[in-house]
Amino acid sequence: MNYKPTESELEILQVLWKQGNATVREVNELLSINKNKEVGYTTTLKLMQIMFEKGLLTRDSSSRTHTYKAAVEQKAAQQNLLTKLIDNLFNGSSSQLIMQALDHKNSSPEELAAIRKYLDDLEGKKDGAK
Image (tube, rainbow, N blue to C red; front, side, top):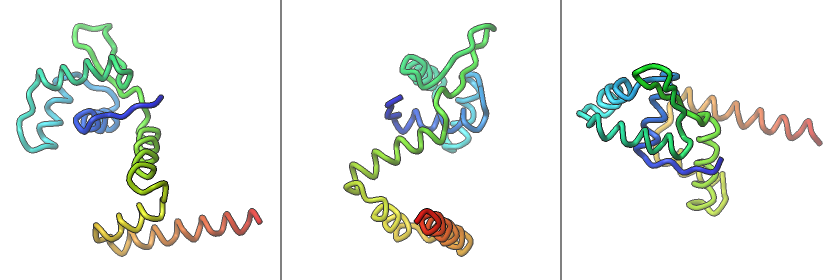
């Protein structure tokens, strides 16, 4: 599936990825908490209806209150958006993205250690493949 969710759609997807499935009211309440400001119910409802039509959400209409679930997996959405970001903003260079990300935000020692381990593991796989 080739999709490009808007920022608002991504916020809804984040809620549903975490919750599993939820009603519009539940999503709206969690969005209001996450944004720390009131989000209009009708705005959330309309967005979720559009997302359903786009195939980003599934809807269970078997009960009076419809429940929605993300139709796309979080990892697949992340990979899709990251690929577009790397291609469009970093001329296809993953290393440029990583260096920019590390320059932009201070990483904790734990995060840096995890990154080093990941890179070491990647190099180990490549050395083993030779």
